[in-house]
Length: 473
Ligand code: NAD
Image (cartoon, rainbow, N blue to C red; front, side, top):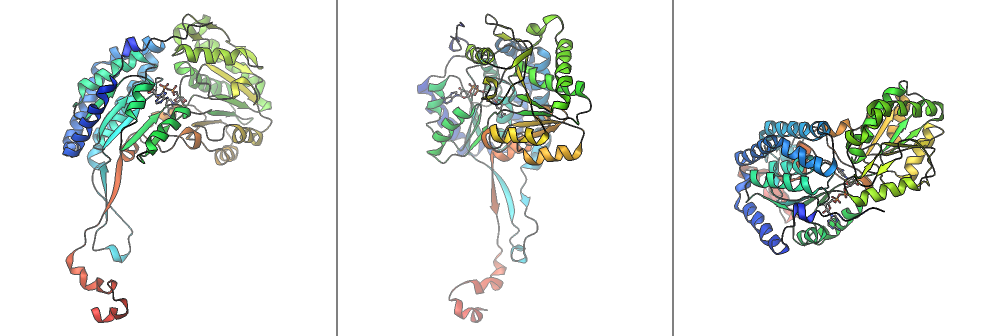
């Protein structure tokens, strides 16, 4: 049995409950002062944050390693390079995004009042983040919220205490304290923070807590952006011509960060015609990626004892056949990259999002059967991956199965495309963020018209009494 105690408090500490109210009041006061409306102020803050993160690269990398034992290369590729790219993109484009948009295509009735859409900040917003990509999941929403002119509170996850502490402190030192507040702690602290009125809440994490957040937000009709997870399927069809390349891309997407990625391929639906070859290709690829059992030093470990217990429990009760991996080490919370073949819908591995290095393989008798499987069991995943070289088959799957994002013949890559919205649908969340989309989600699109006095002569007939309208001219 595993020691499930996890002393995060001694590492990242907790914001004293009695300080939370005054911290929030400070943010609200700043917003009311109008300070954040100034574009140059926003850009200065964003640049300060970008430089602080770049200057503290080693510190952040080491903190993430202390929590997850994640290889530095993964942290650099999946967090730093994407985040720095987004900083550059936002700084370059923000002056354009804040401009009023002309409303085009109006009827003649609106020609004189020149309708515009003005992007207004919402006010004081709250960002609540999880532990699995602690840099990017905290910084990217905060960047967008500041870009849009809001004051921001950030609640870091207690499940990645080293990274939360280091990243939270760096952000606090880099940003104006009138603009930004970082909160640390667990459920009591988050519960206290949620008692207050926010102008928007963005929550990234699991759906169960998502519902708690929505209930709290409901009291004030606060809009909530939910970035959740799901059981993201991979389709490998008989029309997939390069099975080894498919295996490489699926194994990479699955085991990066030890499978603790919201868009990780959760399970593979494979057609019988290519099943045996695909399984053999996966085994070969795993041997190449982690020769001589090197995964323990080359792959991230499980973040917390509870997640470790959950995953090993699922593995112990699977009725499928372990064809790779299957070993684990409770002392280091390491689970070997594991592939389980012959899994069906009732298996322990198919009940919820795995969020760990276990890859179930399910045989689907046809493309139609594979789609039906998803629709019946986990209909709105965060991501969906199709490995096929047949366009009509790709279109068929694409049109039948909904998901937050879809990648054909690869995995994960859509997340780094910061110009496109990233988000879920149904059980995997709502909305979408990154780049301009985060700016939009933290802005209110206010319609503004300005009517000149001289049009009154044209408009008189709109006034009562209506039956004498002709006389009013
Ligand atoms: P977590 O345990 O760190 O929880 C997230 C946040 O919720 C934390 O800040 C935590 O303090 C807070 N929280 C926990 N319980 C709470 C409660 N009862 N009341 C109020 N707040 C509470 O993270 P997690 O949920 O384990 O994260 C993993 C999940 O997040 C997975 O489902 C994953 O797919 C999803 N995820 C989604 C995305 C995305 O962008 N869509 C990204 C990463 C992770």
